Image (cartoon, rainbow, N blue to C red; front, side):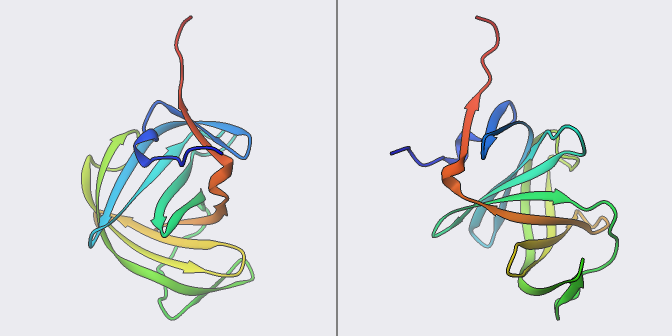
Length: 156
């Protein structure tokens, strides 16, 4: 039996192993939305753009692997959305405060408006940091037992 991953184990400099693939964490955002707290971690992805991993406390920890969709633009529609031939239903929306550490592309602290949708296969999120444009990402749930975190060891 493995110990449960603690959110404090994941921060810039950590290595995350997701389903057997290693990624280095280069930045972390810590969110607080009306007392609900979670972390999102920017992970290097080669080739291609960096991706994100959320660790959320929903009863049991929920892990979501996010892939940014830089090819999409627009505003979220809380009534529901169709994208990539999939029908998305509103899951939750709000404004969360954040603190950032490392390379996140955000300020060191601020606010993030978010609108999150779901379908049978995953999640879709629109995020606007500090009043900026909406950023869109697709998420897939990851079994928490397939996630490990450790620090890189430098030297011998």
